[in-house]
Amino acid sequence: MAISTLLHPLVVLLLSTALATTNANTEGDALYALRRAVKDPQGVLESWDPTLVDPCTWFHVTCDSDSRVTRLDLGNGKLSGSLVPELGKLERLQYLELYMNDLVGPLPEELGGLKSLISLDLYHNNLTGPIPSSLSKLSNLKFLRLNGNRLTGRIPRELTKLGSLKILDVSNNDLCGTIPTWGSFSKFSEESFMNNPRLEGPELMGFVRYDVGGDCK
Image (cartoon, rainbow, N blue to C red; front, side):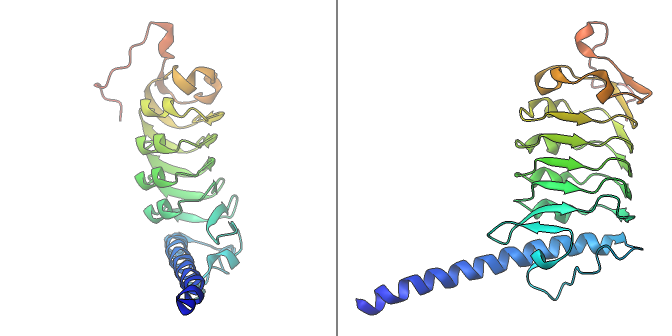
């Protein structure tokens, strides 16, 4: 009985350590997938060494006390390339800062898995394709800045359910359809949507009806 009592805390410690290592490996793999997908002429990601178990030692990466990644600060890093779906595995990520780079391609649907995300700043890149409706799963999101890209398609109506959203900017894209004006979107002015030549609305004016048909792509 005494041996069992002594071993119990040790087993718990070993299991906790193993879990932390597993999380670190998963998150390190996700971040390294991003490194492989981008060109880095200024060596911003030089410290991202896949042989290190813990990505918390990498520059521009912030972790919490459990060694889980909470911030990724790569704004204005002169990075070019594309976002990777593996980023969606960073379950405790709160700030994804990749603004003012030269990122291309679509926004991965998997970003909807970032359940702790507070700020998604991807403005001033060259991202294309639609805004994923999966972003509506980000219940803690307060700042969504996608302005200055080449995003197309309709603004997903599901995003109006983001009750914590305080700042929205999708201006200077190529979005189409109409501007939703209910839910969390009721507090945003037309400045959030300006310079989208194909975008109509706002819907509450009563003159424009949201239509799922048409050639809005």
